[in-house]
Length: 110
Image (tube, rainbow, N blue to C red; front, side, top):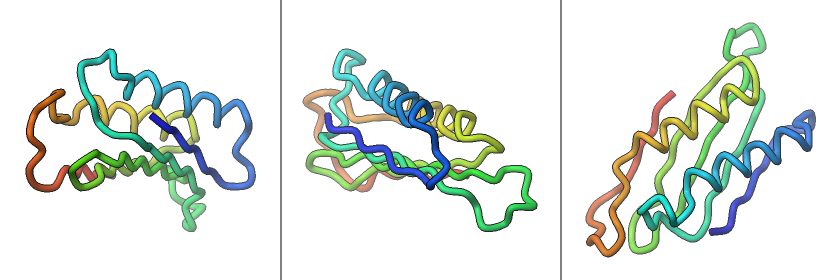
């Protein structure tokens, strides 16, 4: 699994490492799932700086043989946005190993 973390200019190296760790832990093969070969997490400042939830986090997982899974969340801080996105991934019904993957696997929430 290749994990890519992209963020806005003010994202700290510590937040990037935290995001990588959380995604790796959730998407590791030992959890009984085989979601894909590539995951991308993108953190962005929302344009409406007056909003309480000023950071958005989008996670996209390329699923082998199927449509990508995409989760989008928002929070006041990068760590909270990352945590929400990973929690949404953990709630997703991933196809089990060896299961046939039919249709589109999307979990777009905010």
